[in-house]
Image 1: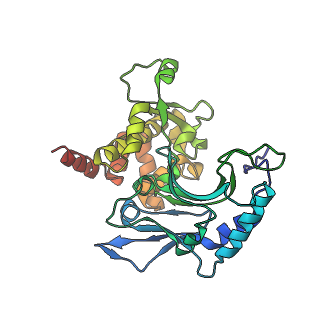
Image 2: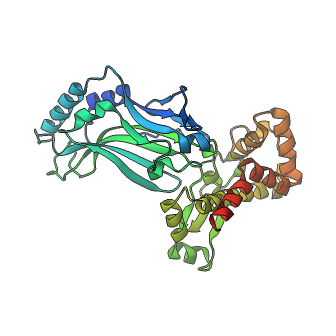
Image 3: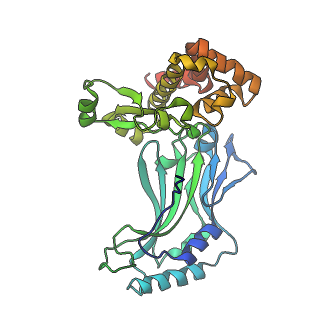
Length: 340
């Protein structure tokens, strides 16, 4: 039976505010090289994902821009109208908030907040990150991308009433912009390895990482992402520290090692399957293995055929190719340099 995934709200959202968000707000990325801003500006529409290489992501100016002809007055009027509907004519129980987040590192940070009194400042746009200056955490996760959300939220608990929002934090309207990594399509989200999970898996306190086949799927040829195929557990305390300092060279190295370990698990699992020898490129179309082959082959079919045979007959060589592809040695040298 076909399934459809969609957000269902227990109350009516503001279509006017939602439409204003979607029509007037954009994420702007302006790449920087040698301290100079490029004229090539990347605009990300609401609901869109744009993939950036790590250098562009970490150096670029990133901002929320508003259309020149956008009328702030119209959103103020819609704000007040919705506030009256939920029982607060002042509009002070609502705020618009800009969040930055990383699904990989599992954090969300509040970047800006507007109330009814200072919403006019939104028309100037908001600079999230500027080249050469300290950046928020969400603008430092170069190898995992980030999501930016503009959300209208309820800031106070109200008396419950059927059909109306009342819980603090309920969102009324939102738009989101995603900056992805070229590797993000692999869908890799390590899971925390805490004491309870260690007992369940039967592993010791000093184990740092532990992969196992995803019990809810686990069929490699049917898996489109790493998470489809493998549950990859990483020590929970270590994950928290990586999240706190994602840009540090040692943190970047450890994150790369975790990712490589997951790739190694997939490649070795494929090569050990006796049926895999008969698999063709057509059989892999759209799968996780298809994505791996495309990455190391620059989308060229003869190269993909070559590296498929390498997985079948010399998986260690393919793993080393992928290690080269993601620049592991450079991260290692940079990490060692920080130790001096």
